[in-house]
Image 1 (spheres, one colour):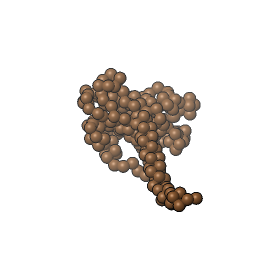
Image 2: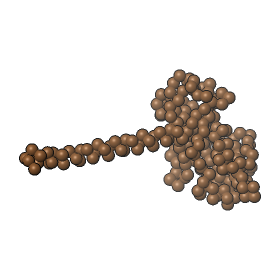
Image 3: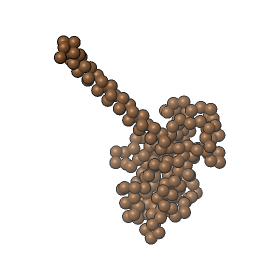
Image 4: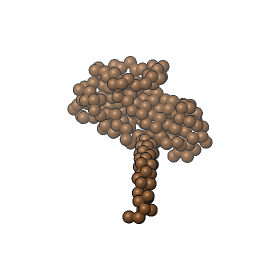
Length: 207
């Protein structure tokens, strides 16, 4: 090997850590961008009858410990908050909060959902996905109060509340003030909770 070639070997080895660091950095960025795109696709805003609603195909909260409690005959309340931010993610301009109480019929193997704050509005017997979707269908924000030509972000938060062993028909409901207070604090460490955010959208472009 000539002296010129011998000099190239240490130089290449010296730059190798730099190349590895750049490759690692690009990998991390790619993973973060992929995770962000998945998160944004999890919450899909749409317009229906003058109301902004969301669908969340990948949100499943009737699983795990919650599902076991339901199979044990316990009615489980869930607190929902749908909020809309304009301009930046932290600039929340509208929000909708509600509580849904889910129960399970062991004989029919179907779920029922009650909305205590809405004159005892209740669902028919539903499948797991049907019960989860029913909650979202009954949570909305009036489009009239939203800017039509600004970038908006929708955010959905769901928290399981204390389970109720009694029939959901005896649930006295929950006040809006209490719901606002609940979502003003972080979820408890042992509390099941979910949070999804949409990609930026404009009301004028929604179907």
